[in-house]
Length: 471
Image 1 (cartoon, helix red, strand yellow):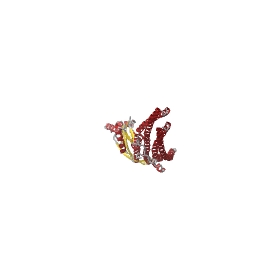
Image 2 (tube, one colour; image 1 turned 60 degrees about the vertical axis):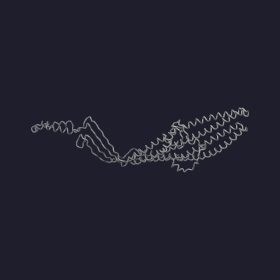
Image 3 (cartoon, rainbow, N blue to C red; image 1 turned 180 degrees about the horizontal axis):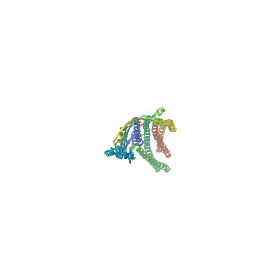
Image 4 (cartoon, rainbow, N blue to C red; image 1 turned 60 degrees about the horizontal axis):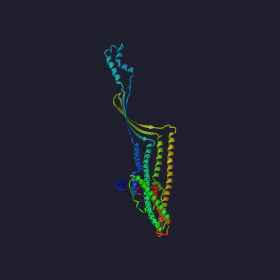
């Protein structure tokens, strides 16, 4: 697909820099697809949905997280109260004041006081600066089916993004076809209007000569002049409409609005008409239509949402593992060192009572799933009607083209006889003008019928889900 776009876009760009850009229907479709913003957004949605599905699959795997913290405390925790600290720090002095022990501890008072002070200092916690850290591993064992349901939802969502992109792609192709054939139609109508104008100009010249020779009246001349003015106005209107239609096609193709473009089917007198097969199998249509598949995926997503909602109110089981480190540590009394330990365990969470919240949420999810099913059934009914209408329009357009071709042949023959009779002087001016008007109308009807056949074929292919770039 990318090679095709490059093969089309690069020549188009090089031509636009030098001369007129030549485009056929396939190149217009390819340019429109490459430059359509909705399709570009759709591609990004597909990418996002793909990564969401990949992310959902990681929920089966263990998660590892690391946590660190620092805290500054105004005061430190103390294992001894002030009285105990004072007693231990003055242990020798207190014992020395005892009449019974004084003679024995005369030389040990200061050493005992030192021992007590050392003991008080050794029992300090120094918890003013606290550091803590943990590495945690969590492995889900049973989450009530939520992980499995969520994986299915993301899988369906990715396919849904693809189907929405396909639906938008067909809309872009159809819109491009409409603009393309509108330009072709107006080009041919412009040629027809200019040809009609030339006929009236020649007739105006002839009628002026006949008035000068006295074989025609001024009333005849005025009638021709009125028709000539109308023809000039028609050419102007068609020319303006053609310019706007070319701008629209350029906008769809991502070209500058002022880019001169020439279409492959502009110069074709008779557009090639293929006989479209309007027979169809409705089940095949449902399988081909991206809208139906998108609604089916939406229905499946809502079914899984029921499981997700139910899982929120079921027991969950997870394996936990930690390695915890702290400073000060308490594994060897209180030390200003980083020391840690590991632990493992199983965590079980069981909802006990929620006043029926889970039941109501599950019922609400089931109601949404039923809505999705009804939307799918309604869409199928409308699509079946749409396909039948498109098939009828194809057959009707083919019949109109046959009748328009016959009318065109009769109008050309009638105009030939009218011009011949006018030159021979046996047919009045009004009859010639009437024959020219009929010819103009028949020519316009034939052009419209040819374009209508092309467009109804595109509508039928879209309704069948078969409108692609290679069509």
